[in-house]
Image (cartoon, rainbow, N blue to C red):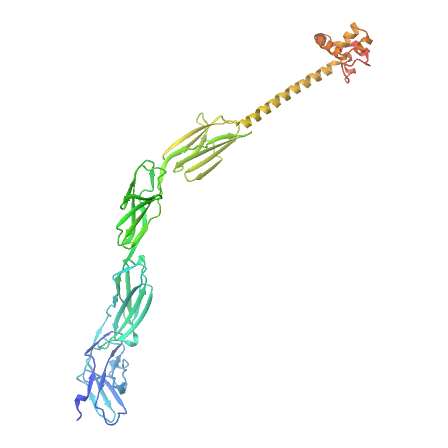
Length: 499
């Protein structure tokens, strides 16, 4: 057109990359000879090859395959001719070039400045970076980035680990942009050998991801003692100390309540284990620190022992027997009588305090003089016999009761005899008979009563003879039932005469 062609220039990348189904922006800038008067209007046009119009302000001029998919995003007055294609088809490879038409000025097609598009069907995975070795509890920084060709619809980046993310975007050359997501997090023990994953989701297609396996350093944890939990008294036992750590523990130590043991290493052997063997714990060490196990008290099994304090006591009506048994494992404790295949006696009460079993039996007094307490478990058995007896205090009570009963019997017998003698006094008055036969009535009436009683006692054999041989002497017995049988004064001598 008679204008210096060196002033008509355009800058476009030789090639741009885009994802099928996404959008792409072809960066473009142009230059033209500056007229004396500032142009009033610009028209930008894009062509595919040399003749297919893919963009024109008048959409009717656009070929059908690109109609509605292209847009001029650059501001021509600022010499920006960037073109957006959305969505990008697999056939959108180019080459493409730009043409500018200046109203009342010249027109120019930049056919020597072409751009091609590399269309991919799937995105590239993101780039993920994180330190190879991290320490538990320390803050870690990771970043994940991906390039794309659609700044208006940036891909979404997400993380598999919780933390504080931040996103940045920047423009690259050749029509590419880069989006970067940074994550600040604090790793834990559970993150060791786990994958840190960054996932990128584009507008179309399946998400893509990148991952890195975390190598988390931490001091020993889950330190524990492994081995048999139960052992017979007198046997030997081997125990092992294990832990979870990164790196692995390089040393182990064993301790009990009095301090460290001379044994080092992950295993220890205890000889001649007894029920008094102390509880143990172990420590594991690595470059990150130390961890220790909980205490282990071996479950030492031994046969029953019937302890001091087992005994039987009794009161006025009840026998109470207590049997105290120490055994591991706790077994059965039964009561039985000494002779014959008799059934066991049911216990009244049973209490267990660790390895000690306390069994009580209560029975009525006098059921047996001897009773057996029999204890057994998986390691053996033991039997102890008890003699059922009263204590000294209760024995004195029993003796006092016996003496009181004896005295009562004597009193009852004496009263019965006196009553019998009183009743028979009016019927067998030997003294009165003697008085009547040997002394006159006046002398008898004035005689000493004590003398009369003595005389009655001396002649008792004669009264008894009359009692059994003369039945007729009882004829007047019922006439006198009251009064002193030894009192002769004022009495009816006629009555005693018949006696």
